[in-house]
Length: 343
Ligand code: X2X
Image (tube, rainbow, N blue to C red; front, side, top):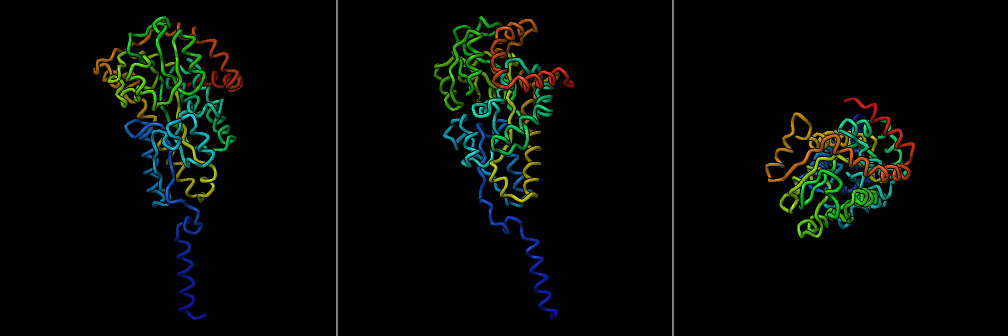
């Protein structure tokens, strides 16, 4: 073979090698649609932004993530998000365990009232055996789980008066999220719950159609809920919703192993940052977020251990009933993990 021909062959081989795997496979989409319920003013949406940026940089733009906040790909109906991921209407999502619990009933674990007494308890579940079990369940349900994030402890707020006992909730109307366990918990406390989406919740609060709601404080501040009548917050920490980063299975399989690794590692990194943002200013000695909320003219009630106990007792039946739905084995494992948690 002539020297020149050999060079041509060699350089062609080098070029093929250097080309991104995507171009060789030709399977990559120009854009991947990422669903979140809230936008970048919230830690949750920030997580989407961080994930997208890391992936774009590290894949040299081969994987271009576009965010669709407001659960826009399912017209705001966040309880349909999981099905849409499975069907490929959504390529990627960072979702709350609550919103996916209609399809994956075990995700109601995190909504069992007063299962998790503190942040260490959330970590003990998501970062331990329970977290692994839940990822396996998600895989069985046809999506690819990648990383954990956090929405946070869901605190109860209302426009009427401070809540210190279940009696204070009697007769108040609350917007609750899309799992029936919330209706049952609020009913057990003597309140009137109505299930609605996040999109519908804000106008309902603003018009006074409902008196209160429950959400993490980062949602409270970013959505400026004090401007829609929510002047009373009670830190009862009854449930917390982790977030889960996932990919549609076919999309995942269309990527090269090297790109999958990039996407997964970026999800883990973004998840860590979301968790940090979600907890900022809420753990002693840094309670600055709570102080900022008080400065907005909001009355923040911290319950004594005894006061909290009355809420625990009042919701115990709901806990027991829903433990069966979640699966007694998984609940027992979670309870054990909570007891053994490292502070
Ligand atoms: O709808 C809510 O309350 C929110 C934003 O927290 C969730 O999506 C679970």
